[in-house]
Image (cartoon, rainbow, N blue to C red; front, side, top):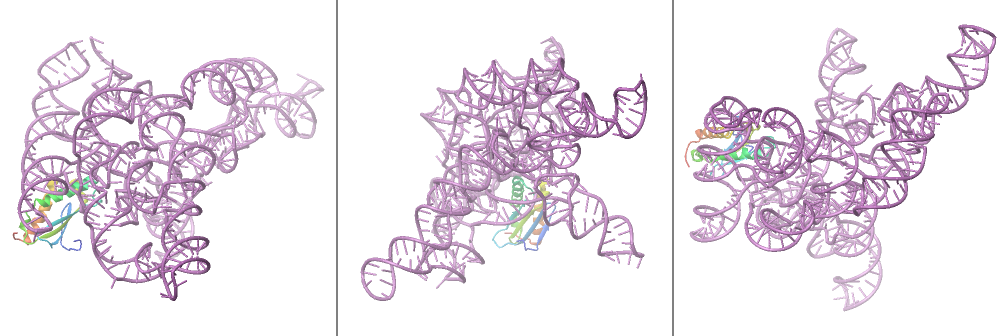
Length: 102
RNA sequence: GGAGCCGGUGAGGCGGUCGCCGGCGCCCACCAGGGCGCGGGAGGAAAGUCCGAGCUCCAGAGGGCAGGGUGCUGGAUAACGUCCAGUCGGGGUAACUCGAAGGAAAGUGCCACAGAAAGCAAACCGCCGGUCCCUGGCUUCGGCCCGACCGGUAAGGGUGAAAGGGUGCGGUAAGAGCGCACCGGGUCCCCGGUGACGGGGAUCGCAUGGUAAACCCCACCUGGUGCAAGACAAUGUGGAAGCGACCCCCCCUCGGGGGGUCCGGGGCGCCCCCUCCGCUGCUUCCCGGUAGUCGCUCGAGCCCGCCGGCAACGACGGGCCUAGAUGAAUGACCGCCGCCUCCCAAGGGCAACCAACGGAGGAACAGAACUCGGCUUACCCCCGGUCUUCGACG
RNA sequence: GGCCCCAUAGUCUAGCGGUCAGGACGUCGGCCUCUCACGCCGAAAUCCCGGGUUCAAUUCCCGGUGGGGUCA
């Protein structure tokens, strides 16, 4: 995944993605210790990202996509609402190029 | 009312919607798996990994050495560097709290700079006594001062973190435990206490500074390894190295088996005891590949009652089952109630003060990773104590 | 998750408990030179932080913080 050239950057997040190999779109999360030393803060960011991804309309995209979301240290200052908007912004930009249904 | 001390089984509650991870039951399915229902799902520190245990493997965990740890006393405990009760010594007005708190007459080392001198006594300035008159000064010509030499002195000055008990009086040429009083200290005896130690008496003018979180001595404890331990499976007919010497006995054709001595190796610091291995499959190392199942949650467990004990804790009886993930599960949103701080102030009270309604804000530190017992560190707030203290008022 | 190390000028490092914490490279200032280089002189450190032991701590002890290594 890391070798994929397709990337999308937002204020607090980095999205690395490529055409998916499975039947449905999948996602992975990277929250390093650089983001926060405390495990509880890293876990909260991961839960936010998983929750935001779960609420996307995955059927909007023509082909399945694998994406890795990397958190930047600035997410700690953001709220769940902001994080969710960034994920939705990424997904809408992706869907615009690959319109379709399930 | 303010400030504080100690303790705590507390760490918002209820309801709803969408999700996540295990368990149990039923159903569907050849399998992979899926559906429905019920029930469970982070902490007091889950953290740091600083101690102690269980458990695991190293054949055994047996002796010694090295290394490490602990260090007032008595008890608690599976154990501890923890806890409880006390002793002594600091801190605080107090409630209370803190203390690596054995030994410096077993030995060794160190004590920089400064200072005369730093551990054994020692005289730089000074003080005092004696002798001398070469030099200088004064002279009433006897001498005197300065000085030199010899001796006494630890009271004063100065140095230092520290200078051989402290203060006062007497004493003396000047001084000095030289003598006395009080304080401190050593030795011995008696009494109380299991003991640390405390109290009392006698006696010694007092000799031998500090440092052991310097080496060390004494007492006690301690084998290593850590669940990525370890077990089973899956995966390569992969590569390299090792498998010794001699003697005796038996079956006796080649050959095979057993025993002994030495040698080599393993036994996770070293040595010993003991023990295992030394050729047709094992050991060690390297390279490639795979991260599956178990270990994995019922345990020195939690709650209640009662008894023993000042207490830590223990005995008995009854009840309960309370997370098991593996790139790693608890999140998102909404409603109501409750909590804290500040503002406003109806009202209550003799007063200090308290305070309804309303408004604004806040709710910490932090996420199990084999499991327990502690310690340490982080942290808004809340509750309790016939707790302490200060202020105001009656 | 377990275990084990390290921390000293900008960087890499020395440092029996005792004055001014030593050295190399680099940086800055000055001298030398017509200028640069070389050379010479000089400057810059909370010894990671907080306690304790000691007369005295970079050093010894305890507790934190931040880095690094290793183990299926």
